[in-house]
Amino acid sequence: MNFAKAELTEVLNSNTPGSKQKKAGLGVSAAVNFNVEKNQLELVMQFSNQSGGPISEFDLMINKNSFGVGPDAPCSKHGITYPAAFQTSDLQVLPLKIDKKNADVKSPPKSPFTLQLALKSSLDIFYFNVPCELHSLIGREANQKLSKDEFKKFWDSLGQEKTFTMDFGGMSQLKLYQGFQSVAEDITSCLENNGFV
Image 1 (cartoon, helix red, strand yellow):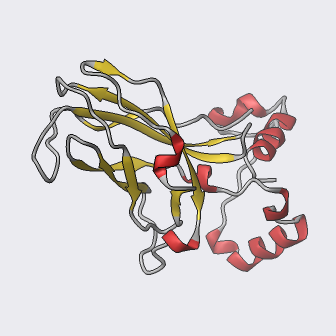
Image 2 (tube, rainbow, N blue to C red; image 1 turned 60 degrees about the horizontal axis):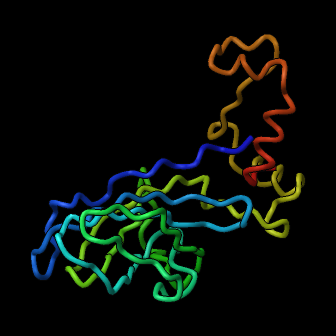
């Protein structure tokens, strides 16, 4: 069991003009997801070309952000292309990484967390925000996981007033979680698959 991947969201409408030449015609739907199979954070995009002509020269920049999310290599190396006129592209994937060089340590994260992107094309330059679920940013490597003792020490340091406890057992009064009563191992496996245990 894994957390649901974020759905593609329209982040740029094809009627929105670019910032330089004020040309419209490029639509973008995007989502940030963690690909469990590849152990990789990814920006998944789908382009719509309503400009009436070809669009080329893909480049993308992600502004500095609270978590340091950015492309894992120069964007031109990933072979991302725009579709032909009046077509919609297949899903295009840009691998991401968390790097302190792209971190804006002076600004705390906002809720909901979004990545601010600048997308360059032969048509124009477009600016937009892509929502990013925080659970996608949690490290999955074995050497990044906290041991039970480390987690307990961290948890205890929070203090009782900053913690919340839920009972998933048979006596739980929360109907939302009663589906887990008989399959407690599903909760553990869900947490393990998503980097929490």
